[in-house]
Length: 373
Ligand SMILES: NC(=O)c1ccc[n+]([C@@H]2O[C@H](COP(=O)([O-])OP(=O)(O)OC[C@H]3O[C@@H](n4cnc5c(N)ncnc54)[C@H](O)[C@@H]3O)[C@@H](O)[C@H]2O)c1
Figure 1 (cartoon, rainbow, N blue to C red):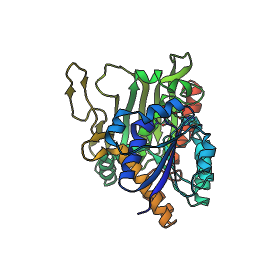
Figure 2: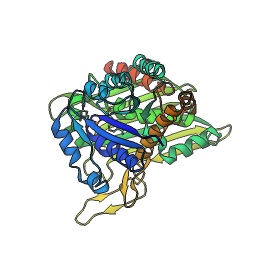
Figure 3: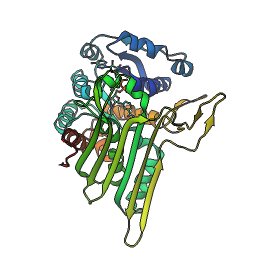
Figure 4: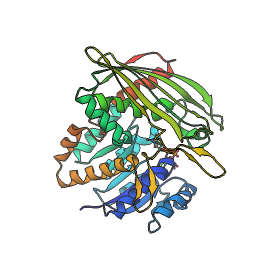
């Protein structure tokens, strides 16, 4: 089986929590070769290399750290390998395009980019070079999302009518590097994390969003910068349905999960109602450690387990994207198949996300006015 050398651009939280351990696991399986991680700050790379949880699970593995500018690092890769793009939201466009220019397949964290034009540019550039761009909307690979998609598409819920989703990150996110980039002019709580649930409603139902309004509250980070750290969004869909999405960097530190998240969808048939309800942080596990704290860990997103390394939909999403790159290397016609299958989000098959994000940015900066897509 072909293995890819990988370069990860960005060494922050998501690289630590999901991307690097997933790549290590894939290297164990022979699907990834060399791994380089590029960040601007040497301390970021030192911290990543020293991570105890990663070292304990993968004692035989290391990565090559580099603080060279990302364009140089990308250009120095052999062609048709893999770039994993994990920089802040507003930088995705330039790093993804530089990766494609260096002739590399791309695994990008969500949201792909902030505008429709940028997403189309990435799609065209990738197609011209027969390269794959996969977007890590990993909630798609949570089994419960796949079950809901199948049952919804079999007609078992009728028609989606009203829904509510939320994802509240812990308060301490305000103290992280987020305060340097997730500021009012660049992004907001909805675009950063609410986009997962907009994508999921499309993934389950196949409906298209038609209008968005996002009301955001400005709040100060510890460094004094201003962010929309509390957001309330309303997304209207092609069948008239309406989804409300609330997001924040405000979940209490004392809360038992690492965040609070979930999705409820109310649906109707000819003569009866139906419902899908997912609690996405409480997965039925309660731990009370000696001396505390009480905790409700998620067994499903990403976990280290003895003998297997890492498991969960966070890992599976990266595995599927690497697998898709291999399919495209073997036969470039796979690009069309992957777009059609719609399991992995690609620029061509998930434009709904950029349409919503572009409109959401306009809306939030305009006091929550509804913007048609
Ligand atoms: N659940 C999810 O899907 C999820 C969760 C967290 C983050 N993310 C996404 O991942 C991305 C990164 O988030 P994070 O939490 O890791 O942020 P972070 O702020 O912790 O890390 C960003 C990293 O990028 C580096 N960086 C910035 N510009 C760079 C450049 N030009 N070259 C090389 N490195 C550069 C920074 O130094 C930092 O190491 C964001 O787009 C975010 O939305 C997704």
